[in-house]
Length: 217
Image 1: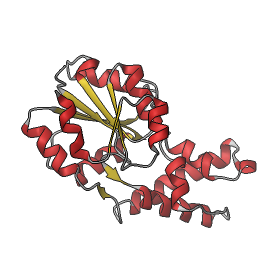
Image 2: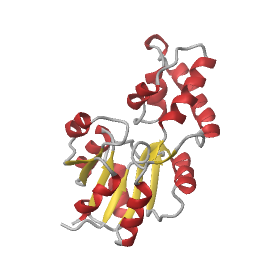
Image 3: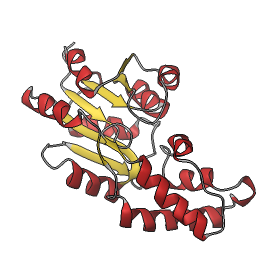
Image 4: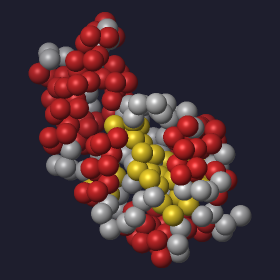
């Protein structure tokens, strides 16, 4: 079928946020007297929301609710101040968004990043393109891989879920797409491996953003 829209993940798919997340979180851990982590480890720490990130980076014997809440709040505070230092769209993303826009394909974003930071990131780094929806973590909508957010976006755009390609870089994204009845496409330039994407349900893997275009028809 001819797809009418693309639903994107944000971190690891449209923009490379890994270094700024790593630096911000490590600064918080160091200030609190906890061990820091290599950037490669953060590929697996991120993706399930800010509080889960805080829990994953803490030593196992310090993952009580009070400590997790405190570290989560500090990560948000520090990251909000320095997220622009290195974060940028991945190579090929501007070209992909231009091509999709020229073809009349509609665009939307679903992230587990908190709502306001997601909106700010898109407005600053991707200002040239129109997204019908930019949805992040917010009250009343479960985080991915629950499909509720994806299905809400489809309803708001007055499209059927099967009319969406879903592009993401993690098993969480692929599971969301499968549960929402959208076509799951794995981005190999992101944070996770081909093996994880396939295990999560990816129908196809692409190495470069523009490789998405032949899948539209």
